[in-house]
Image (cartoon, rainbow, N blue to C red):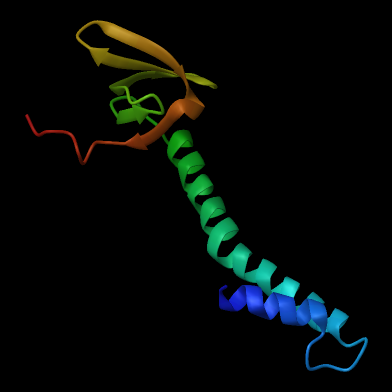
Length: 111
């Protein structure tokens, strides 16, 4: 058993407290637990989603990108909901803007 389990069991059983006082400490612990979860899980995920949305909105022709399926290409044309990506030679793919996950301009080999 870990410390959190023991603490939760003691709080639920009201160990070491007057009868009726266990409810308020349990409520405080749940609020603290939710606050910690928000701080370490929900907040960073929202920040990452906002950065990704900003990246997608700032796409321009010539950007080197990677799709969610792992396709590397160069942006050739941008529309409201889709992007035309030049993959290799004359091969072009139209993908949904939401499937573009990152920019690989820095990772691209210098030719």
